[in-house]
Image (cartoon, rainbow over all chains, first blue to last red; front, side, top):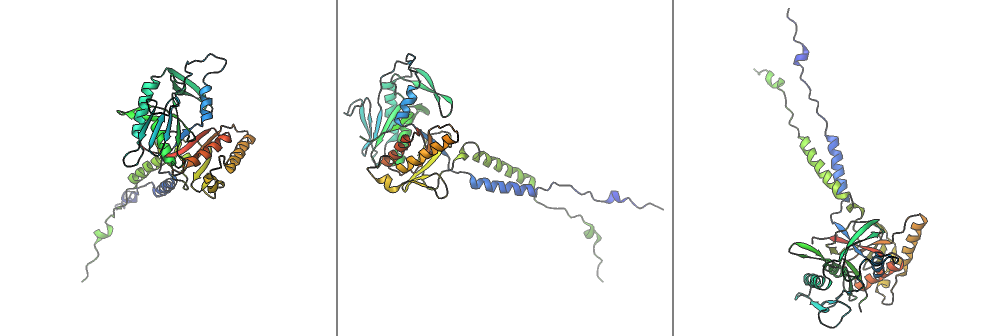
Length: 202
Length: 163
């Protein structure tokens, strides 16, 4: 009598798959949660130092007990006024048209010409302020790090004051600050006046 | 005469034709990592307020959470999503005789004293989410008030745009 074939040989082998559904549910829930909280608009900070604070930062570079490190007591007093007809740029406090007071008129469409302002300020930086005398650093009390910056022959060679008519919208002021901060020439970004101060329109 | 049911059909193995979840899970994991990167680090610390239309700027600076206020055409407010406290009214902003906004100054002084009470170092930095349509004279009132309350470092929140 022949033996009956073993059941072990005929039984189908069950495949042991990992159940991915719970994992999929968790991942889908996380994606929904993150998409809900994610900010689609990228935001940034525009740092502004009021005049008194800017002067304090500048003075903190050279303690009074020590001899001044840089012989740059002169100031250029760069100022951009956002007028109804365009930008008025003044250097050394001049208000009569000439090399130290010029205008950047508004475009035919009535918009401010930020690109020309940047280009003219780049000329000022190159011709009047010139190359940096050297590099200095000052401790930033907020970040507790040393802020490194260039020193020019004018003590305020990195600063510019901005004034505007009372009704000038904040967006125009921000765009002017951007135009004064740096300029892109032939694909290279060049620093102009990174410290801007908002002042009362005179 | 009826035919007997086919034994082949009865015993034919039925292959499962299920979804291939492995590749889908891989894709979802990549999306998840991307979203985590987007919401993590510095960017997620502050969300633009729904009450203001932020100006755009080419400035690239890291976000730093500090005392935060909102300035919109209706007044100056605490930076809270729900029922923000009014720190200066629309009338205060439009009043040509007002130079310092009393409500804002009181709020900032209170914040400063509270920080001192907690033993925190007072950094004097403030973050302002200012609407892009705010006129310059109103902006100066806010800035002057912050300076008066010893908040010397002011950060304006802006939308980042390509240079």
